[in-house]
Image: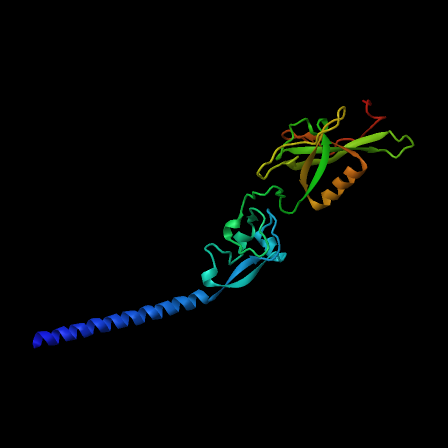
Length: 249
């Protein structure tokens, strides 16, 4: 009789433990379900974010915006905060509208075909130069060059020109399609000139905004020629040369 009572009690205890375990699991499942439905703020692309755009610019220009998404639908690495460090990173390639933005989509070296990194506070200006006007093929991204400008003197002789230093030290950030930022499929290709004409290539330089105005005016009104700077070369302050002073002592 005693053994039967013990067996009944043990069965009751086991059943009770089972019921409690089921109740706890169900409660945990409900909690997990509720947590999965909890809204989480993440960034979603509102417009195309071009490769090379900083996260900070994408945010300030409305290219990305915060959207609430159910927590269970948020992938690992979703962008939730654009802090000081993240704001300086560049989009590695184009981000399509409607795409949930991942932190891995930003980095320091873009992979896009049309990326050109311009130093902070400066603008990029392209100058088309012949081979001889760009020191053959020796001017490359990262070179520092002098830009000379030959322009009409304003006299009655339309062919009379004078030459002076326009900019004495500018940074080259791209030559043709080759730039300081490595891009996929890049090359230093130059335009193919017709037979008998000199080949030309675009040399892109980074200059301050106020200097860019002078450079653009020089491009539009004169003929530019580049010189590759040597160490400690001082081109600023050199005299203006005209046809009448070319051979003067």
